[in-house]
Length: 272
Image (cartoon, rainbow, N blue to C red; front, side, top):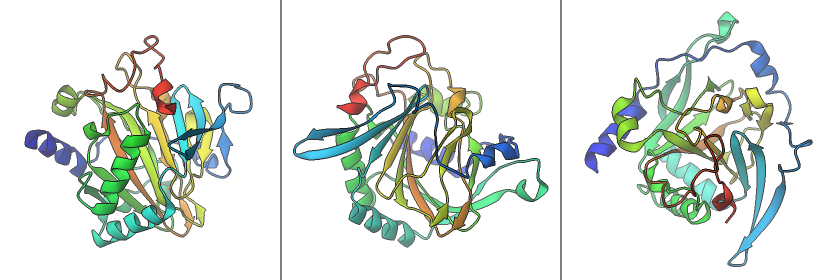
């Protein structure tokens, strides 16, 4: 267990040296909310699920790649308390690389962030167990520690993929599998800007405080899904804070049903 934790922490301390190149057209998609094919695909729906007298609003944003948004899954008061815990951790600068055709945007961008063991702080622990109780398709215990990022004015996260390169992260991928899923919790939103964009599939969303966005980074055959390229759009005013769990593939055998085929997951447990 300690060996696995050390592997995770080593990964957390170093960003991949691969720089994702992108052009200004990707940033153009940050300007307005985009919902991809939601207006044309009848399978992309927003509905309410209820259990134990709790009503949960769930929105399917994309089927391939699979992206789902749980509205108000984390109570606003819990999110605010988690923000206070994060601020108490004295978030340090994390360097995030981005490269564009415009020289002034090709510099390495610094964001404030830190890493936190799942249940190390009371409110993050409560949030973790709430997520596990409501997202039954994933065993969140296989996730890397929380990554907490705070973006101030003009802060952004360059377009990137969450899945790991098996060649440069061989030990972690062989021991725990790749990052099959990303779980993003929105703790604080900026007044302007700061949306989350998937440029290849024309999705640009602005989740609210307490919303949780989940997407699958790999295909059922284990290959990476290139459609999951995503970014945090530049902050125009205010501060955005998010907490992310990167969930690994090994350990999901009992929570996720067998895939329908090499390209399609059986995602029914995400709505249970």
